[in-house]
Length: 163
Ligand SMILES: [Ca+2]
Ligand SMILES: [Ca+2]
Ligand SMILES: [Ca+2]
Image (cartoon, rainbow, N blue to C red):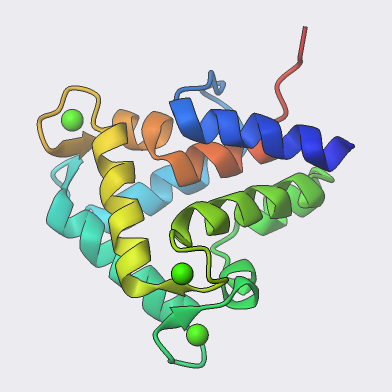
């Protein structure tokens, strides 16, 4: 029951990609570090090429058996620190649910694995959705508040009170 509610909330979060996440919420620092890593030219914003390259790098590092497909296991095993925060906060179950929801979104043809082209298209959509002012660049704020993967994972480890 709990899991169903969590995935319903996450689906809604992914759909609107604009939930209110407190500025000092857990995972924000990690998301900022991630942004700075993608922003290899230190301009303070990302273009679609940088975002695409980031996606390719992530795909390669997730695809441990190098068959150009991501299984759920490969997808769930990959981490850059967010899982540790989830564990510390006792939010591991919600975190894993969020990952499963993201996996389902990325697996666009529903065959149980994510091909590079599926991931690439999903990230392209994510970029456009996060780009609020439609200038084809993502500022740090647009990335932190609108990149649906980050938003979903941070929402999972920072449960908002429901009233
Ligand atoms: Ca693989
Ligand atoms: Ca697929
Ligand atoms: Ca923008």
